[in-house]
Structure formats: C-alpha cells, structure tokens
Image 1 (cartoon, helix red, strand yellow):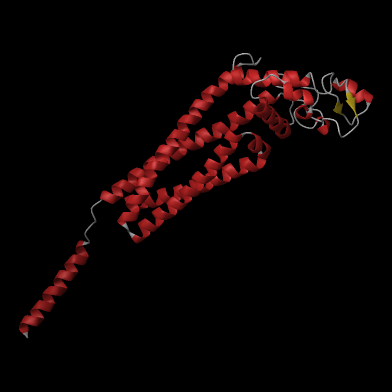
Image 2: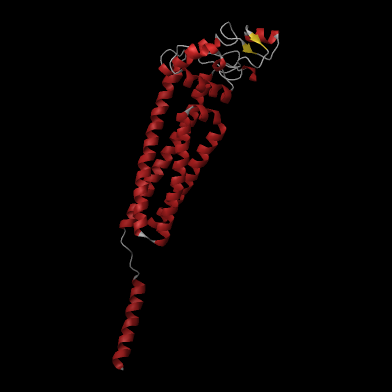
Length: 284
C-alpha cells in the first residue's frame, strides 16, 4: 500500500514539474515586454522554469529508485524531496506576503503613500506635461483636429523628432529618482496593457510610441490586477504542491523504514523441498 502511495507521489511530482514549466513559459511568452524591462519578473519566471525542470528530473530519479528498489537512490530522492518541500514552503510564504502587500498598494488610490507608486506617478506627471508640450516637440502623425482632441500642442510630422519621453533631451535632466528603470517599467506596462498614466489616464502614450493609438486605462490598475491574478495562481498552486510534497516525503520515508514482508508460503515450499532432498540424500 505504501509503495503505491510512493509511486503516486512521484507521478504527481512529475506532473507538478510539467505544470511549473508550462505555467512559467506561458506567462513569459504572453508578457515578454514585462520580462525585458522588469528584471524581478523575469527572474521569477526563470526560477519557475528551472524549478519545474528539477522536479521532473527528481521524479524520474524516484521512479527509477522505486522500480529498481535501490535504497541509496531512494535516500537521495527523499533528501531532495525535503529540500524541495522547504523551497516550496518559502514560495508559499512569499506569495502570502505578496497578497497582503498588494492590498496596501490598491488602497493607495492617489499614489501618495507607497514610495514606489509615488515615484511612478511623479515621473508620469512630469513626462506627460513635457512630451508634445512646450518642453519637447514630438513626432505626431495625426492632423490638427486629432492633436487638439488629444491635448497635443507642440508637434511636427517628422520621424527625426521624439515619439516617447525617453527620446527628449529634457528627459536627461529630470531630477527624479530611478527615472531610467521606472521609465522602462512604464514603457513595458504601456506596451503590454495598452494603458498610459499612473493613478491617472493619459490621452496619449508617453513612454512608448505615442502614435500607437489612444490608451484608455490606468497603468497602475492594470499592473496591480496582473500581479494579483498571477500571485493568486502561484499561491493556490504552491499550497497544493507543498501539501502533496509533504505527503510524498512522508510516504517515501515510511517505505524506506518498512520491514520487508516475508512470503511464508514460499518459505514453507522451500523448507519441504529441502527436507525431501535431505531424505533422498540420506537414503542413498
């Protein structure tokens, strides 16, 4: 019975490894812009893929150990399972912490409490007041009516002129903390979610190509919704994986210390056979 449970545990571990690889790969392919500009997000996805691959390899190791009944491999498998259990428990704890932190960011509706939100909101406000305004003449492909509707006052239809705030000369003298990293992050948000503005909605794109269309969403809301959704998936899956790993580890340990069952019928047949052979030998 315990051996069957151990087999089930290794099969589940194999499937969980496949899940982490597919889940992380799909998120990466769907939000590649975020991965390029947000190193923490890219690192988390790479860790997820690596973790899934290691789980698959370790599950195969467990299958071999069980099939061949190799105790040293089974001991190594159990040690690895314990380490994976600890890592998965850490991921679960971090997911719980992230879930509680997201609420505080969502409640900061005006971007006046959380330092990171304040930085992004200030950068967006200054940039929106500069691009296509007096501070930076931009390259706008629309006509005068479209420019007036969007609030664009300083533009020219010339590709040599800036199409996003990072291309403006005045951007280099913005006295704002982490403006390079934050502008890259806002650019990734605009390209990924077709939004512009932070705790506001800009009438045109500021950190990506302003001629790509008209945004109608707040990037802060889109970013928080994205992180909350994926963190909830991670939290639920981590809770399930942690529980299954704990069970699999316990069953494997029990099986290692389980005394081998004696086949009494087989032993009795051997005893009778040996007795008959001894009687035949003595009679000779």
